[in-house]
Image (cartoon, rainbow, N blue to C red; front, side, top):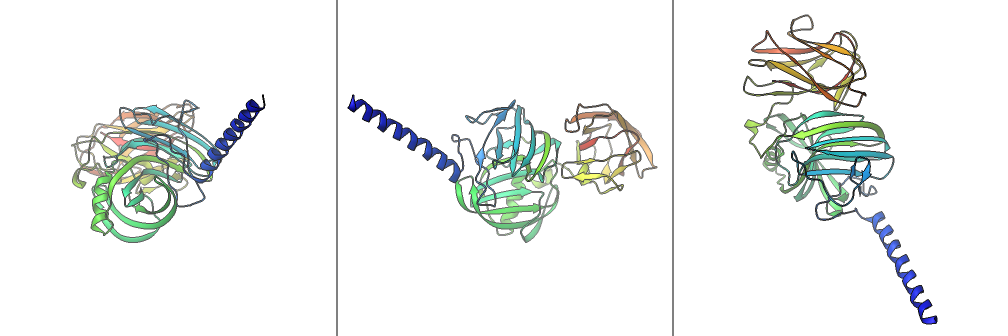
Amino acid sequence: MKFNIMLSSILVMLLVAFFIGCMDNQATSPVQQGVSKQAVGTAVATKIPQVVESTRGDLNLNKIAATAATNYYQAWTSGSGTMNAQNLGNGHYTVTWSNVGDIVVGAGYNPGGQQMTWTGSASGAQYFGVYGWMSSPLTEYYIGRSGGSSVGSYSVGTGTYTLNTVSCNGANINGNGAFQQFNCSGNGGSGITPSDHFAKWGSLGHSVSSPNYCIVATEAWNSSGSANVTVGGGGGSSSSSSSSSSSSSGGGSGGQINLNSWSCNNHSSGLNIWNGGVGGWTNGAWIEFNSVNLSGKTGINLNLATTQSGQFAIKIDGTGGTQIGTLGYGSTGSWSTYQNKSTSLSGASGTHNLYIVDTGGAANVGTISIY
């Protein structure tokens, strides 16, 4: 009897020690779930990652879901506030968050380097765009974000960028420790080929190798918001000459032109513009894109969210210029539920300044494609 009691006491002590050890480990190092799970690093050493993956509201810490459009999905939170991330498959993810300390959610590839194209947008996020890691030397990078010390500029197919570097020490994909961060200020819209940027960083004396994951990320801190994003395309690396257009100009009749509403060249006053969309539309409000080649283009698609019915006029060469299309829409269910709305274009060819003009109703407008 005494012997059994001693064994029971020892077993209880071992179990207590085990659970205390797990709790201490979670508080001092990133949570890694299998060989595929990667913790997201931050530049703040006190923000230790807690990796979570949520599908249909249920936590799933056992695997990364592979999809047809991408092979990598990630949902990470620093732990504060609330986040609901859903991996819907085929590169499609949604996330809502409230009063978070820091979150990063996205879909993409591991290893990275492929062309990154996407539709959708994020409302309330501090960053929305291409984000990833390199393993040697250990590097965290953002394309389409400023910050840090400039080490030079370079050009690729989507435009001219400035490479800014930051020395960091904190949580990263290897655990904790020193790493470098690259912030590439410039166009952060759809159609980016990271491998083009990798090569240019090397030409500036900052060689990188061994790409790890690369995602179209929604990152937010000290905020509340939502995102609805579908990542697709990009079967392999491409040279800078073949990268897709994604800012204020489009190329020819050979393919689709991808534009980001928030990267417009000009706009009317009063609009609410964030990195991921344009809202606050009233009758007569407009955004403009310079030098769009409309040759061979017969349609336009707007990815938008609204609870109203409304209409946009598609015009060229001014808000009072020739109208080449009318795009009507109805409610998508909420101001954060984005759907694609399309209409035909006619009566335009060659290069023009393109205007999207509100003629009734209001919507949050994300990405725009002309085909």
